[in-house]
Length: 172
View 1 (tube, rainbow, N blue to C red):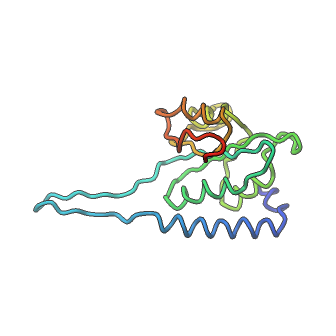
View 2: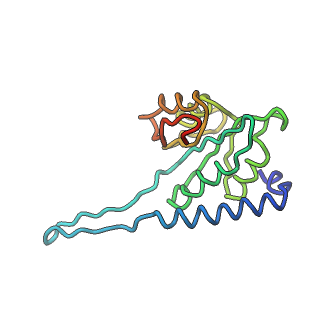
View 3: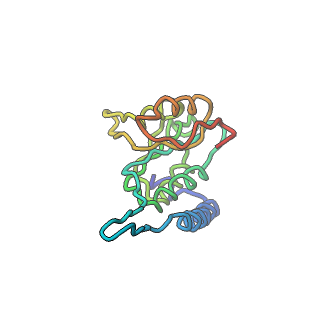
């Protein structure tokens, strides 16, 4: 991850940082403040937002590179206070089976230290159930765009973990 950040084209880094700033500002504006409703003496209803402990984000990486998916997924989770964030993205033959360096760099800029080179339905299952041999602990929620197999896998793990939606590739 560190090597990918160091090797990132400065113009691309500037663009990613600019996107992070904008998504962070928009996300912060969406977090509702706690609310207390007094019903009677000693009777209150307190409403507050509580983040999940661990979130997993799928970042596609087949024919194109989507650092925007990293930014648009991870930043709102960070703003919400999610303590642990993990990214999974398909391994790239052109990069010795690693995650695409631009995806790694975007994750690194955001302080993500846990990135796995895995794609498709298998990545969704791994995020939901964990992979002990890889040191991957299960997450509480899985989000991110993907193909029809990713959408089907998210449907299958729903209930074990939260998901964002059952959207198809063009609907996320």
